[in-house]
Image (cartoon, rainbow, N blue to C red):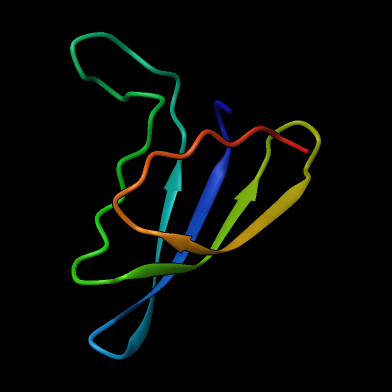
Length: 76
């Protein structure tokens, strides 16, 4: 997933907000981990998670995800 672009849409205080990430190349001692930690404040669920996979250009969309969970996502 190195190079994958993530967009996370969620509601916080009644407003739709988005955050974006790019999965880096990894590293040791906590530098650029492959696992992505995304703070969502007081959100209770993720409205939409959009993943743009590098290489293939495939866009994968997941919705209605619970917060405080670890997900393993594989390119479709």
